[in-house]
Amino acid sequence: MGKEISLSLAIPEQIRRSLFEAHTCLKSKAYIASVVMSGRALESICHHFETKSMYLNGGLKELLQSGIIDTRLFEWSEELRKHRNIAAHASSEEISGDDASDLFDFVVAICEYVFVLATKFHKFMQRKDRPTAKPPRPIRSVSGTGTDPGWRLHVSDRLSADEPALPESGEASAIHKYTGQS
Image (cartoon, rainbow, N blue to C red; front, side, top):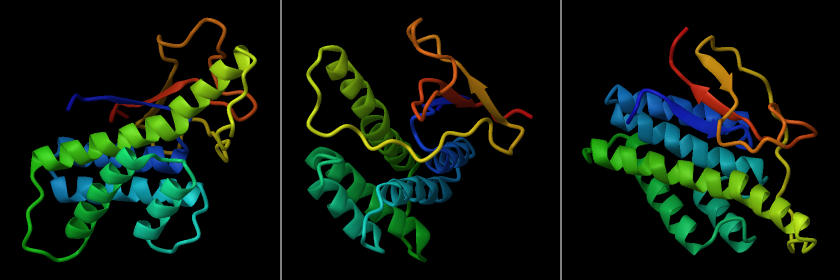
């Protein structure tokens, strides 16, 4: 893991915060804590989409049934859920660095798919004058830089010239980087 991660502002702030903490724990070799925070990010995805189940297992099934995630992402999220439970409850089972890193990568990939790629595809189809069946659910809010002085907002050099530097009207096109520096 490098010293810095970049996450799209299309990913809701609560989820990004959990991902940044999971990454910080991973860098510190606090693998159990990293898996717990990755699981928290996954649970926040369910909350974002207002799943009815009070339990992560049920929420993930609702995301699958509603087409927000596909079967592969459901399998990834199930593995993360299982390992999150191992990490969050007293157990003699170990969480390795490789497992924690993979599980972190899985939840980031799920977020990219659900929040970033779905929006990009919808915009692409609108430009082609072929609307998608269901537009992606807009994020509830996009905020500035957070309260931690280590949070920095950077515009990605991957953005096209016609995209705004900061989100407008609920659409996120900037990249949020956590450098861990004050």
